[in-house]
Figure (cartoon, rainbow, N blue to C red):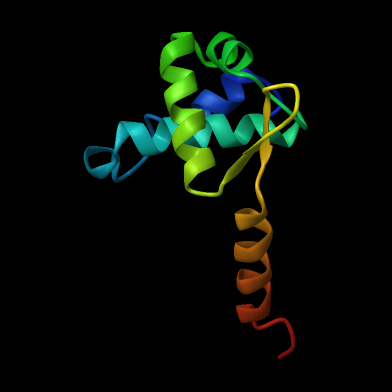
Amino acid sequence: MPKNKTDAKTLALSSDCTNDKYMLRSVAKVSQILDLFYENAELGASEIANHLGMTRGTAFRFLVTLEELGFLTKTDTSKYKLGLKFYSLGQIAYSRFDLVK
């Protein structure tokens, strides 16, 4: 779990990545955005932009896209929180782990 914005950037865009030439920057940015939710229940575009050093417009477009795909939910205060799609995927992943050997 990242502890601050530098950790989030490092996790998503590590120069030590062995497959760096195959990484899509947009997917790495999405990972950075989602990592912010480890320590924040809700975030707005301005907060994400400040944490990650991107424009508010860019952050907003990422948020809208993630909301449309079900990964985020918009709150009554126009901020975003993790959506139920993560819960569903987590349940599927959990059920597929071989926990008993």
